[in-house]
Image (cartoon, rainbow, N blue to C red; front, side, top):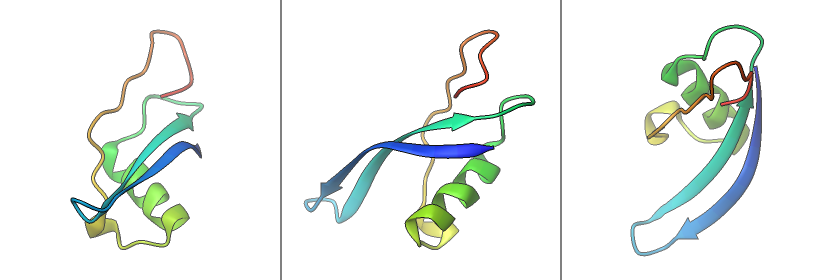
Length: 64
């Protein structure tokens, strides 16, 4: 599973950073927990501070 960050916006009003990302995977759509852990490692954050709102995979695609 490869995670690529597409867009990263600082949101000072809510004290957070909003991130858009794309996951390339070989098997079925990865779980939110595994994506959260990978994204937290990339951003140097604790996994409890990362929230994945939506994972959307188009039929037959290996990208989420």
